[in-house]
Length: 410
Image (cartoon, rainbow, N blue to C red):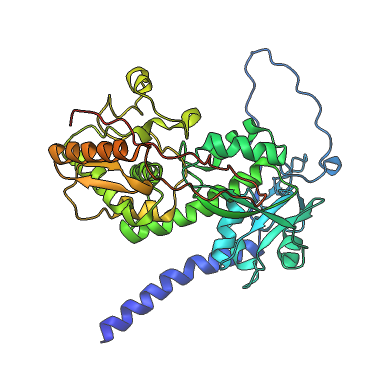
């Protein structure tokens, strides 16, 4: 017992010594004497321009907290002058305050470009009112922390990222609605998102009427990343964008193949089963990427498209997600149904029929074709509801689903 007390006292003494030294040096700044001049060599040098006296330099990011450049015989280094919370900063004009605790708000502000230190999270109020705020002039960080709940919140409108939309679709429509430059929107998206496409989760968002590309993409991708992280932690126990990308690609294929959440795990099972057997996916949906999003895939397109998105030509997954996904499609990508199915084909009302063998698959196709001939039509499909509410977002074309051409090889 006595030995344990001695170890505790020794540990306390070891910790106390650096704390006392740090406190002493903060109260008694160290003075550094200038070194003796070194004799100059016979190398011609240009005479540097005269430096204005330090008293004439205005404090700024480059000069505030820097050692004095006066001709005095000593220089004072004071840690307290490394940062000045009272100095006015050019903070982003438009800032989003998310719902959540102090740590979540701090992480969001750092992501948006505020020059914060780790210790600044303790300067934030315990409860922060969410919303968008606009700063009309430079402000000090001290004043920003003090007034963060007093700033008026911007009026917002609803923004929709529809499931299955590609980034091209969304930015094209979004730029027309907001008069923002699409090139800047693309640049800001890739600055914040690690994914070539699919980095904005399908759903509803609130954005202010007066908007700029940076805050818009920081918010959309940031909110999506929070959901991605939550889902990944649930199924993988961690979140790694490089690893998560595989499931995001599978989810984007599922999203393009079906609108029905209840059959998404079955489609996921087909994808996982074919990948495990090193079979080509042979899915039309993988050719609906980028500018070909939501366009019918023809036999000619299958023959001529030489990109890695053509899963009739190449094995494995396409190189990038096809577009936005819903949480249901992501969950199906992580948890496929327990099924040995390797094939599926679209039947009535957009529903799919799944088969385990190629012979069963061919029999299902023959039965569907016979039913169509006897009915004298292309099938009884229901149209998706037409969206009439004016809002930002890409309106999916209401097209009658067509049974895709079926490849005759497994």
